[in-house]
Image 1: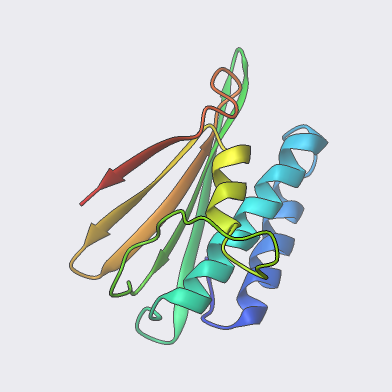
Image 2: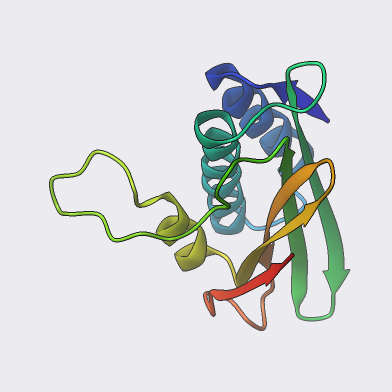
Length: 138
């Protein structure tokens, strides 16, 4: 799906994800997915350029396994001068913790870049929950 490269884009993506995955994944996992998707879309809006048409592309894939659902979230934007990176935020900072939240909730996450922009993805795997491995491809 595509959402506006605007603060409302995160809300639209959250609601659509929740609508589509309710009943397909456990409620605790759905809450994590919604939080991480909102963070990734919010980061795309704040820190990256839009794709043509002033949008951000949002996708998810659900795969059922015998251990439970595996979900991959992907947010694609037009890219930024500097790629996404985790940073240390002082206790009184109002931002700077988003990718720490992603890393704490997802099994792993990473960034892929091509000539059109960048995609930030987060995977939720019941066998590797909260491993928070960073995988970056460039």
